[in-house]
Image (cartoon, rainbow, N blue to C red):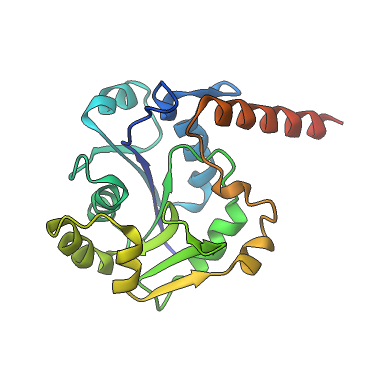
Length: 206
């Protein structure tokens, strides 16, 4: 099924102390690692970002279309709207720029679960993962209504549209450690990510 992958990279990185999307792991920025992971399963890739980051991203010559957030300061929901409005495909996969361990098989499972639904979202321990989810263009009207009301909760969106929730058991078949949902917010998170990648690289050489 044709899919657009949308990477949200416009949030503040106050806890990290630097722009997380541009942090390097194994010689590539986090946003580049995300693009590399998504390219084989995507018809197109869009990076939705802020005014502050649009020029650095364009200068990096990313293998993706870089667009400016239509709703700056409106969090994930504003970024989701921006990406969906710019996508050419009916369905889009939306992830954060700070998730270095995305599991392509799990992402394909979500994509293949989408027909017949407006959205597909993983649910782990009662928590929904909005930045590892599938959205259709039919979500745009509901998102716009929420934004106009000042409501920024993505969970609220899922309650308004026909959403398929992917259970923890389904997720465990592809990613039992749930590393897919690990995101980088602090320097400790960044150190852990580098350590995991270094460890996996060492195993691959054995």
